[in-house]
Length: 228
Length: 390
Image 1 (tube, rainbow over the protein chains, first blue to last red):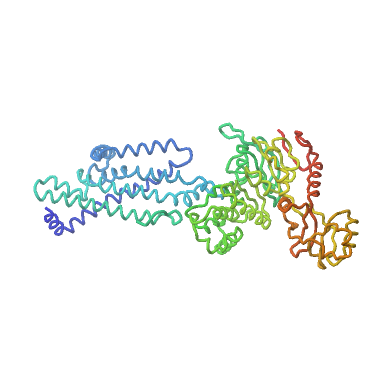
Image 2: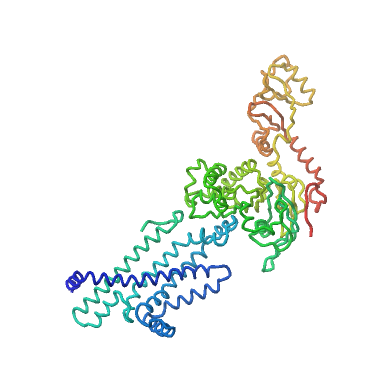
């Protein structure tokens, strides 16, 4: 079995590589959009007097995460179809991943901004910083490590969820796993194992890279603990 | 410099934090706003730089109503230091200090020079060792020094300080208070300093505004506050040991006898006795040719009069200096069981005499001068005090 996997993998490097790139493309595009939307939403709900809205948004993004991915694809097929967007393939998968990635990013952005030491905020205001300066010079730099932790969580999670996208015709490593499932017998098992192993590897590597990025974006004065 | 006219603050929840406060602070003066917690002192401070909106009344800085100014521009011209310091943890000491100069877009060289200068001023020496450190790499005292340096960043004419030394241990606090007084003597800012600690108020203030439940109870110099508290509340607030506190404020030169009776060591005892008779005293200071203090001579027995002063005098090492607080002189007297101290300058020159009797007399006169008889409420028309009743 192990030998079969090894032999097949070594003979199909370029195919696997292509699948990995397809997989990455979905995850990166989805999370790229998700980060922008999530951070902006997080900043917005951290504003003064929006505590109730913040609770609601975090509650709703939490609910999104509890929807099983197959059900999510089903719902999106209906919704996207109704507004004239493609019902299968790339688009619904990317939209699903954006929605799944929202919670960790929005929640972490919100929490990190809310929890900046009030004395620091008061000092900033007292020195004559505008709302914008306070946000960009004080709140966001201090919040970035926590936001990055949320991004990391979202990306790793989405590497896994993107696999299921193959069910509705998206590209990526999920394809290999689905082909394997549909082909009983030795080769089928090989496909499933190869697909699963590379999805896992992709998740581990992204986790590692984002961990390093998290460390690098932490301002020097607030770094604790060791370098990853 | 700073004028408050009938300042009223009512919070949205209905709390009436300030009930019509009026007083003014002269340019270059350090005004301490003191009172029990909940008296509105921090609110008062935050009204000045408009961190909190005013309900009614007027606050003028250099004659300009702060309500007419853009709050952001206003705050950049007012230094602000708070108890929790609130240093920006992701910025170095240099970046923290230069917060306001950067907001005001000062030229680069001027900024760098300013950071260095301020580090030196607040005692972070040598500055090179501190400028590139982060707040997490500093001790509590050092952080508060940076906080003060940051407040002074763009050389604002006005400085607001909210219990700046409140979170420090007593030794560090004492040290930073002393240093701030030294800095203030040098830079002469108009300072509004909030504290709940009456000892700090007495030590730091040129003037003290005592608040209670949103009202100004007494506005006076520390000495006036101690010698003529306006009512029982003030008396209780300054403490039963207010006389001792007053002694801490008075300097030896203020109460010493600047022309003490003295003889030279090479004079004869007969001459010394004549001198004592003249001054009607039983002891006399002995000095050398250069007027340097050597010791004391007590009235000698008759059979000794042939001798020189130098042979009979008692050398003395317990001395006071003109700038020593009277409390310290008193402490030296008690420690050594003596009733008098010679006051000498650095070169040892005798410049005065301070005695226990003299201290008592000065204190008694001060109370009389302020028409205060103990435990009588509501003394009116106390000189220099302007209370506001509403």
